[in-house]
Image 1 (cartoon, helix red, strand yellow):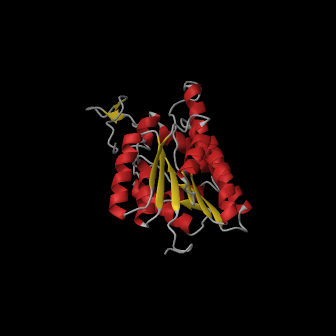
Image 2 (image 1 turned 45 degrees about the horizontal axis):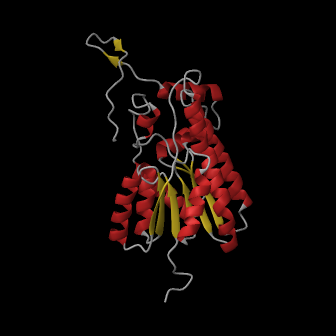
Image 3 (image 1 turned 120 degrees about the vertical axis):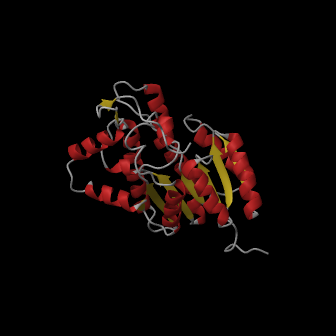
Length: 285
């Protein structure tokens, strides 16, 4: 009979149907933990759930279809978890989105949905599950921030601001919980080979067509940091170096660099003159 110490734990992962979320699910499954997968793409999650359950002989893999841009969604997810009889030991607030463009020209409705998804939803899910973790005096929370949290982000202004919020929130909460066996980790990846740029309308920017981190590497960095109780992890040496410069470079210089990276890079025509058609997207879909 299993004892309390060798009981399998349960991880809830938002944005679990692709990208970092899918890679987190694989890591937890490999270590034998139960899964609660949350995203809008029901069919993708079901395929992933069946594969991971068969591959790793998991006791429970629960799929919850939810649009986390809806204000009601966090409470609905929490209630479904309660109804399932599972307790969340690892909360992975991974789901997020951005929109590319000048703030004066982008759609306010879309930006409000992004703010709900990137900030309010992880805050509310943490608010709902944290009391249960405190009652058991165990929990690991990972919030997806970004290297964009360390500097102004022209052409991704709302996204960058939401990630600065998540970083600050995570580090403050980590301090509040320092006398418990509950930890909070902020994972800060740089540009990565996920669907983020395409969905944000930024697939032809310099950042999207430059050197991209692979999602499995980013998830592994975040997973290991969370399991060790680290408060912040910047994934990748290049990104560590970039974020370290934010401590001494002026914000205006940082903003100029970020704007350059988020602009579309013109191609050269046969005469060497710049063409302004967007380059071919080469990131993985």
